[in-house]
Amino acid sequence: MITTILAEDQSLLRGALATLLSLEADIEVLAQACDGSEALEHVKKLRPDVLVTDIEMPNKSGIELAQEIQRLNLATKVLVVTTFARPGYLERARAAGVSGYVLKDAPSEDLAQTVRRIAAGQTVIDPALAEAAWATSDPLSDRERAILRLAEAGHTNKRIAKQLHLSAGTVRNYLAQATQKLGAGNRIEAFRIARENGWL
Image (cartoon, rainbow, N blue to C red; front, side, top):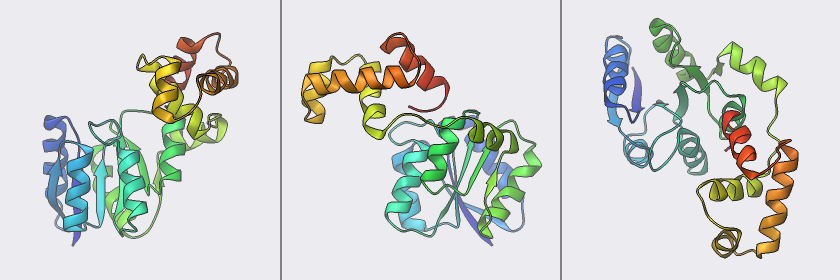
């Protein structure tokens, strides 16, 4: 029996996925979570074979969940099921140790088979996403990404500097570097480009 936990903040979709997997004789849904923090607690307590998770969720994203599972050295494999066909997300997911990355518009019968393949130790990536990921690589450093996120949230350079224990000049330099790397004319355009590519 393959044990799973589902993490999805949209309750209707979470219920549909749970029903779909529960119809399979060899797959058991141990628990469902509406956000990343709840999902992590379930994983730590129940140690499922596979965590099926969305990317964008409150408290912790699917990628952050995968990073925590990797950090804690847990055996649970992570399958990301998402609407975001962005190569930047896939690149970060792979770096976080995710075993599978598929889109929500994939045929429903494929989901159970993907869970089986991941539980067996295989890696499953949506072919269109894999192709896009090879063509586009994330130009941002982790520091540039963190600063861009804070700036996008409306924080001033001074406030970002205080939060990250940097000087305002250093924050300004990081923002300028990120803007230049993204080929953007200003920081607002930089947020948009980075967000559209899944690099934030």
